[in-house]
Amino acid sequence: MREFSDDNEPQEPDTVGAPKFGRLLIVLVLAVLLIVAITFASEAYFS
Image 1: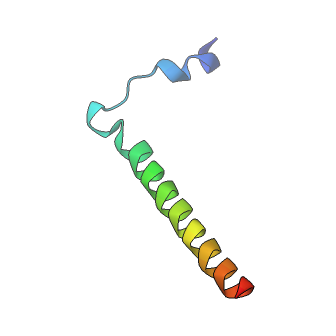
Image 2 (image 1 turned 135 degrees about the horizontal axis):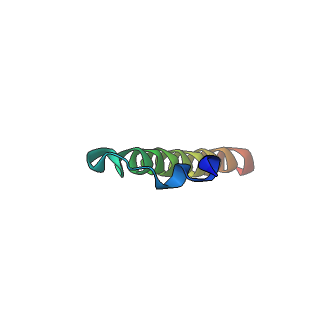
Image 3 (image 1 turned 30 degrees about the vertical axis):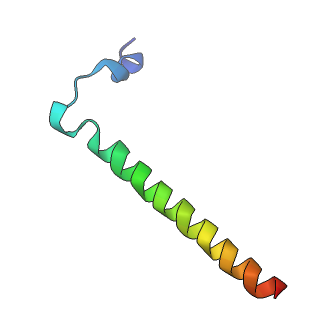
């Protein structure tokens, strides 16, 4: 049953939240840029 116990291995306490927070920040910035691009494209298309 060793293959099912990978989730319980210890991690470094100083870098546990850093990759997830960085990835979340990048996703949020890309989402805002996508909304801005759609806004400008629709404004240029409909006017």
